[in-house]
Length: 139
Image (cartoon, rainbow, N blue to C red; front, side):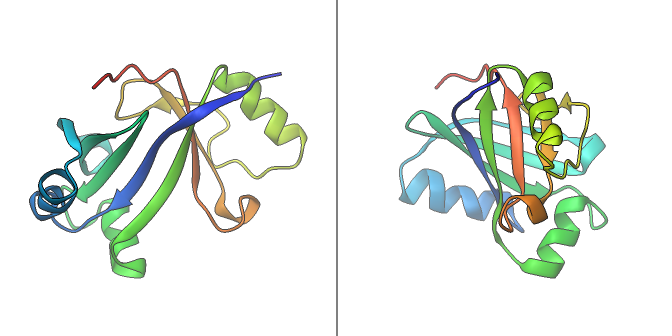
C-alpha cells in the first residue's frame, strides 16, 4: 500500500509574483528556494521553504494559462494542496479502485521535476489535491 509521507507544498495562485514574494519572502521571512518558468503550463513558479513543506506561488505567464482562468474565476488564494507519496502509480491505482475521481490517471513531470498527478476537487471535499513522488528540493 502506497503511503502519504508529508505535505510537499501548498500552491497559491497570485496575479503578480514579485509583489507576492514581498509578502511571503520579505515580510513573513520564508526562504526563497528558486523561481522558474513552466512554459508548457503557462506558469511562473516561486518556491519558498516553510519548515519541511514548500509554498508554491503560481503566477501566469500569459492571459490564457490555466492559472489565469483560475484567478479570473476565483481570485488569488490557495489553488491546491500537494502531498508527497512514496509510490504515485500505486497510490493513483488505490484511489481509483476506491472510487476517487482522478484528473490524471498517469503522472506528468511537475515544476519540481518529479512525477505529479491531480485528484478532482469533487472527490476531495472541494480541494484540488496534487500527489507528488519524492520532491528533491532542499532549502
